[in-house]
Image (spheres, helix red, strand yellow):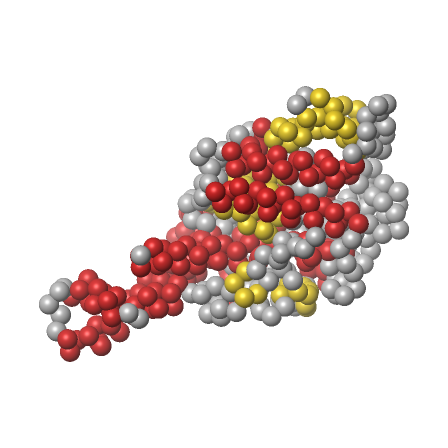
Length: 464
């Protein structure tokens, strides 16, 4: 099967877009009439045109630059001691710019990891949102180089995440992470990155670590996490199960109500899933058993984990497309490979590498490849259906970048050596700070592109 890459064009600043529109004489005269009335003398045309252009530049650039200055001493006093210190503003200049003026197309998801001595941009001492199991430095990880890399796409640059710019772009909006604990890992990374601009307040409906809501009051921006390891309705039927990881009943044609009933009002939904589908599962459709994955039940055919994985994503996408009032953008954050070596997770496997792979040193294969291909196939089908209803789907393709980071997992540094934990060597989740901070770099670049697309679409409509 041929997989089409999702190509991200390097954005064109809104100011240039407006200048292109003003290039026509009709637009110039309209701008003059707006500013000075219909009786403008012809000799004023050059000066007036320059003035109009200057005004447009000011009003276009200001919204994305003023967050750097809006954080006054009075606002710091109002929000208390939990606000970031002056060091929060270090190293932001390079990523504070508007989208690149280059119109060269670039696949930001294909590239290499390159050294970044300026990283990390927070620490386990400055960010309280780091989950204990991802707090690698606290639990004694001796090396620190795994935090000092950035993603370099082939043929272009990916700016480092700018928290001020991100919060300005999502002002008045909402974002939901839907999926397993790696999705929650991603949300915690984003909270830490945003902490240089503002700390959120907890606005969760109930005290439940699996379903959290955070609000950035200065920007009226809400971020939520909905934990749903299978995306569809599921329940554990046997705590042990054939594989000693529990046996789960999955109702493959029923989306998990815990998230699908909550996301209708969200502006952005980031969907993910994968690692839980390696466990023993019994598959139900229309309330009847149709097969399983390693269930060892008599007269129940083994359809493999891939059958359940495909059907779960198909059902999740279909459920989103069926929501009556949902107008948001659905992002599929693609599968993040684990990196167990010398055994699987419960049979001595571990991840002890301390540097990234180069792209020619490893490849996507086996389970990682199957999951990735299934996601792409179901995504494309769902996107076609969504387009008919005016809905938008975007591919947050983190798989390759993540595949190249075997050094980014907690391994045994997610707990004290004496603790009795299920996942003793954790090669699934990610240290914070760490590689998945780059997922926010990707997301911000995609959101900037959304702004450019909207502006270009508006210009096209205005010309009709």
